[in-house]
Amino acid sequence: MTEKEKAIIDKEKKQLQALIDSLRTENNAIGHELSKMIKLVANVRASQLGIDMMLTDLEKKLKK
Image (tube, rainbow, N blue to C red):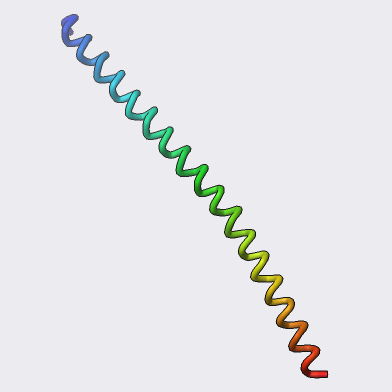
């Protein structure tokens, strides 16, 4: 393999590594946003469960 060919391969390896780094950064950003959404959904679900408990309590009072 000539020096020119080695240089081209080295350049391509660096470009591929830069692409991998970029994809990893994007993937981490997506993961971070998903984790925020999971927390939000958990809070909404907790609120929904609280409302359901209040409705159940109201039903019990109406049946007395």
